[in-house]
Length: 121
Image (tube, rainbow, N blue to C red; front, side, top):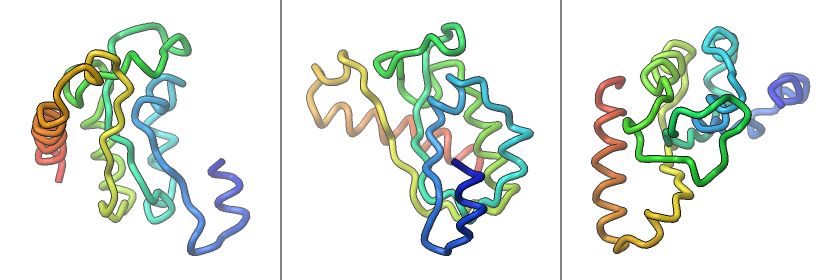
C-alpha cells in the first residue's frame, strides 16, 4: 500500500496505520521508520493479547497498554518520521467491551489511550 502512496505522490492520498494489524503481521519499526509521516493520516490505537503472529483475530484486541504491542515503539517512530498527530482513533472489536455500558467504554478507552499518548507526545 505504501508503494502505491509513493507512486501516486498526491497530497490527499495516505494511509491508516492500525497498531493491531502492524503487530499482527509482524511488521517492523525499521520499515515504519522509512515512511513519510505526513502520508500517515490516521492511527488506530489498540493493543492485543500475546498470540502467534498471523493468528490474531479482531476480537483479540484489548485496551491500549493492556497487551503486548510495542505501542511506545510505534508512537516514538511515528514521532521521529514527522507524523502530524492529528487523528488517532481507538479501535476495539472485543465482545466483552460491547457488553459494557457505553459510558464505561468511553471513560476507560479515553483514559487508557491518553496514558499511552502522554508517554510519547
